[in-house]
Image (cartoon, rainbow, N blue to C red; front, side, top):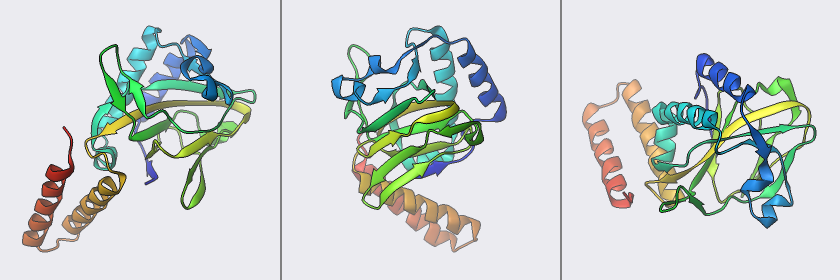
Amino acid sequence: MLLHIPGVLTADELQAIRHGLESATWTDGRQTVGVQGAQVKRNLQVDANDPIRAELAALVESAVRRHPLFFAAALPLRILTPRFNCYQQGGTYGMHVDGAVMQVDAQTHLRSDLSCTVFLSEPESYAGGELVIRDTYGEHDVKLAAGDAILYPSGSLHQVTPVTQGQRLAAFFWVQSMVRDHQQRTMLFEMDAAIQSLRVSNADEDAIVQLTGVYHNLLRQWAEV
């Protein structure tokens, strides 16, 4: 499931993040990947030890956690601390797949079920820089408004095309879901959306309650917490 999540960041949050990134310490993005990834990655990332990174990451994580569409689709168990990247002057990241297991700290790891990118630059401010995600239906070019996010399975092949003009800033992170299986998670998301739609249409309340019970019983059966 490839999901566009609009309005993750408010205008004030977006301004605060952009302002913070102006004073951040940037490093070569190849330092954060293995040998294979380093061959196709050409971008900058905020230094993990820069205090501004923790401050801005907390802002992004708080924003996504409060967004009902994100929660319904991701059913997050753990969210890896968001990171920030910059593509400019031909910067690109060739076709790759994200690692299956991410290190949170010395004792903790996270299984990457879902990847999420929150766009921080307005799409008209840079040329190129599309996030291209490949699935069984082909390739999908993603270039969203600043403050919007894209959520997609971490096992998908994807790339960022070269930025030939301007600067592309984004936050990105990975999610371990309570529901590991992608098809099960998608069915739960679609059922939740149907329940919300039925509520808005003033459908029979007893039927809505029964369907809600089915949703939670499936979640109870499939969730790993």
